[in-house]
Every structure is written in C-alpha cells, then in structure tokens.
Amino acid sequence: MSNVVLQFGQCGNQVGHSFYEFLYNDIQMTTKNGKSSNDYKQEALSKWFNVRKDFLEPKAVLVDTEDKVTKTVNKGKAIKYRNIVSNAYGGSANNWAFGYNSRSVLVQDETLEKLRKEIERCDMLGCIINVLSSSGGTGSGVGSKIIEAVRQEYSSKFIVNVIVFPFKKGDVVTQNYNTLLTLSKLYDVTDCSIIFENDKTHSICSRLFPMKKLQLRDLNNIISQQLASVMQPIKQITLPNLISNVSAHPSYKYLQISSAPYFNKDNSSFEPVQTWPSLLGQVVRNAKTDLVIKNTLCKKIRYIGNVLITRGVSSPQENDIKRYFEPSSYVNWVPDTAKFVHYLQDREFSYYNNYVSLLTNNNNICNSLNFILEDAWNLFVHSAYLHHYAKYGVNDECFLEAFQKLESVLNDYKKL
Image (cartoon, rainbow, N blue to C red; front, top):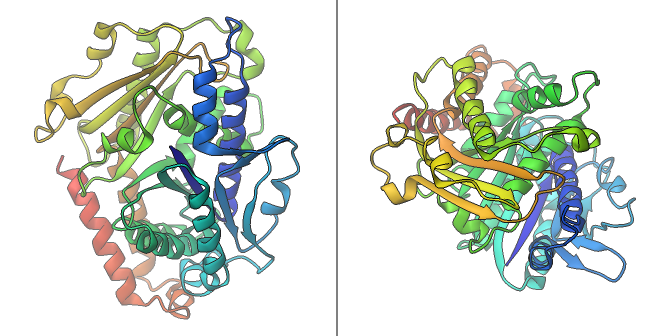
C-alpha cells in the first residue's frame, strides 16, 4: 500500500525532502547483527518510492511559488523527484489570502494532474499526506486551497496533514492570522493533522547539540525522524488504520508525536543501549512535563487515544507498557479496547537499537491553540493588517468564521 505526499511551500518542501532522506537511510541500513530485513525494505520502498534503475523516486508532488528550495532537491544521486510544480512567481507575501485566492491559481491544475498520475502509479493508495507550515502564505494559503480540491477529487481517501507551527516569537507578525485560517479551513476537509511545534522541536535540538548553532535543517531532521518512526512499516497494520486508532472522533483531529531516545549519530557508538522501561518513561514524562510547563488551561493530561510503537530487536514486557498508561488518564467515552494500542516492529530503527514513539491525541494541544487564538484576536480587534487580507477576498466575516471554528475545537479539547 502506497502513500503520496504533497509538499507545500519552503518549509513543507524542506521537511518533506528531509523525511525522504531519512526514509532512504533507514531502508538502506544494515542491522547491527549483520542482517537486512528484506521484507521491511521491500514494504518501505513500496510505500514511499518508485524504484528506478539508478535512483529512487519519491511518491511526492512538490509545490511552491518560489523555486529556491525545489531547484536544489535533485542534486543528490540517490533520490530524484519527478513531480515538481514551482516557478519564480515571487512567493505569497506571508499572506494566507494572497496564497489561497491568487497564487493557488498558478499551480493548482498542474498539481492535481501530477497527483492524479502519481496515484495511478500506486498499486493501492493508503494515504495522501500534506506537509506544510501554517505561518507563511504558500504552505498555508496555497496548501489550503489545493487540499480542498484534493478532498473534492478524492472524497473517500484518507488525508492526513503534517503541520508545522511557527515559533511563538516568530519573524512574521501575521503568522497566527495565517495559522488560524489554515487550521479552520483544513479541519473539516481532512481526516487529521499531526502537529509539530517549532519551539518544542528546537528544545529537543538544543539538548541534542548543546554546543551547536542550530539551523532549520536540524529541526527538520527531528521532525522527519519522528514522522518516520510512526509511518515506516509496522507488522499487520496499515498507516490509515494506525492513525484511525487515535483520530476516529470527528471533533478531535489533532495528533502529536513523542519519541525517545535522541542522540547524535556521530556519538551513537558511545551511547549505552537504553532499556524499554527507561524509554517508555521518557516518552510519558515528556508529555507530562510539557503540560506542566505550558499549562494555563488544563490541570491534568487527558487522552482520547494513544498508539505506542516500539522498534528494536527485543520487545518490552507487558508490565513495562501497562504501568505507564492508567485508565484514569483517558476520557470515559472511549471503549477500553480503543484507548491504548501497542505495535511492535522487530527491527532496529535507523541507528537506534531500541526506539519508542507515542502517537497521541490529548488535551495538551489546548495551550498551542489558545496562544494562536489570543494572538490573532489581539491583532484583529485593533484591525491590524486586515486590509492586506481584504485585498484578496478575506474580509472580517471570513476571520470571524475562522475564530468561531477554532474556538469550537479548543472548547471541545478543554472539556476532556
């Protein structure tokens, strides 16, 4: 079963390229016991690549209104992209409305045509995955418009967003206008969104490279690693079914990933093999610590659902897993069988002997949504920058509808 990735804007294409590089390296890895899992390799290739004679071709469509990123992605020898829709149009001016109502016209038809051909090359389509940043104009505005069209064209397909939230103290003053409009537009036309926050990812990188001046590529690598840890093959489960375990309710569509361990590849030979109880503890503590640090709305973490994925040549004990997930942490309207699911892949992941990922749907997202709404409201009540959006067909009424939609989602999560 294959997945096709749509990458929008500078961030979406950088994260997408980093993701495919990570997939390639994981597929090519020879396990430390000298064996390569051929079944795993073949399944991963089938999911993500078209295999050509001398290179691998990602099952992806790259979309941008500038070409400074897309013109560099085919410089490597191992991975070559077939579907690139971009030109030097001048970007989307960090304006969701400009991207949605103007720039999208330049690229939509060609994008949908290349997507159709890529889907026809698949043996069976599992997911359409959209990768974008919510803060600019192309990823958010152009992405939203094209994703709407994709839903109309493929009404029964499973569509997942990978959305990167901006730094809270970002460089784009209208970033939370753009994020607000993106989230409200995509909520009803896609099945779920996996959220990554730049501040949280930067914190992980700071611990990983304490002496290094961090670059965006470092953050993209962490996002790629976390995505791959969930999306690479797992025995007896497809990606749509895996994600559906935690996103079955239509009012709760925001997912997050917590993973462990993290260490620098160059130092991997000096790192001890961490035990499963230690890794499981790290994953749960990360979620709870994050809630305590950022908490303004939620006194206790409440889960709708969790999917735990362990990758390694050994497997954790049942008691090691169960003790970290108490029934009292879950909402009572979710059936017991759907609250927590564990999947094991008995193969090393990248250069890690043991690796744990938790795909989770919980009320921790309230803090980020609340910050976005408060910042956007503060601009809106002072009519700041609204004329830039009105010029391209997004008026006050459009904003109020977006506020109403996202506030409704936030209130649903707050009630957990």
